[in-house]
Image (cartoon, rainbow, N blue to C red; front, side):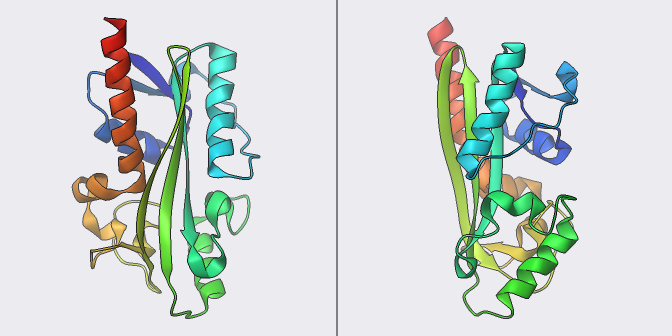
Length: 196
């Protein structure tokens, strides 16, 4: 079964492909020759995920899913949240985003945060919205070279390493996207059973 992941983010694509059973073929927007940057104008992760999945479904008529993820920091009232990728501006500059978070936290002792990932899915004329999250804390130094985005400054609860230090195998057991993908895999499996 082929399903389109409504993204042009190669890091996300690789992560999902490593998490989903190889019996499913996950294709990106590039694979269907969709070069359009789908505008994420929603005010929530859920809204943005739906916008991206709806675009592919209604333009191409294909089974598809999308993900919108964000870092939510308690001391910043849930920011950067839906603006995570563009927190410091439209350039999606990871370094500038991290510096802005450090500046706004300004050494605050409350560093509690979470990563949330919301999937919106169009599959066999049904719609699903699912979520995964991982709790943790922000640190004021970058550690590790793996992962992407805010991974080098986020330590998941129960660990003493950042997501960027854990490596892909360990990260893919606990990450927000991994949690959502487990639910997605179950939905895919249930749909296959229903087809046959």
